[in-house]
Image (cartoon, rainbow, N blue to C red; front, side, top):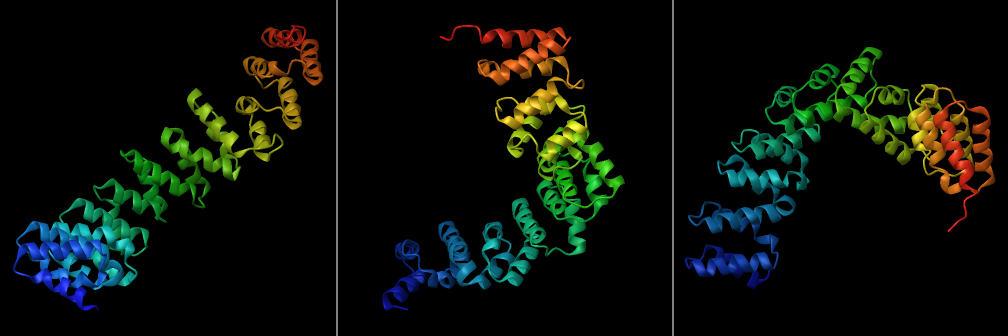
Length: 336
């Protein structure tokens, strides 16, 4: 270590407060991590400025260069020291030491510190069984949420599905959606999803990705707002009209969301599907008329005119016929 650096570090003990302050500033400005141990005595300085700078030095340099120094802060009673350690747990490469520190911080009087220590142990799968039980009934929803995120206990997750806190319910539902459940467990989850809008929103994208039969149960009896969300999710995940998920929805009589998904699609596969839906008795009049209205911009295409004429020839529904007439006559109007 250079003599000038040693001299600066030594000034942390200087009787002249101005010399000590200047030394602190130089060490921080030059990012001298070798000085971190010299800051230990400042942790008990009468001047709060020096105490705070010592904690800042520990936070900045100790995790990488002197992690053992953090034990002193964790074992101490100073809340600021606890906050320092809790904020750097993820940066400590010695996992065994980090685990020891986190466990010490569980007894801190600061709620944020306890939360960070708990979540560290939970997310790194380091918590003991008795700790997990404690975390699961914690008054801190963040700790409970983190516990549920890694839980393998279906019963605990099912109980959490009816918790009063929405984030707890969401995490329980999300975790169960990731698990291989029995039919009875799936049914209980589906009931919870149908009664909880937040859970429903979580379940839709996952079911869309997996393309399973849950798509049908999710879209049945949903509100208009939920239906719009569902169609948006379809557009994000489904590219082609012959996608198996489209077939699944049609087989489940979910024609309304499929017809809405078709809006703005002009490729040949979509045209084929649109025509099929226009003559599908399961599709209601409003959805059929909307499908025709949404292709008005293509009124001069031969394929579109043939479709309009086919509807005029075969349909007896006045709402649908009106939309078909508008489409048929639109091609006769002079373009501006």
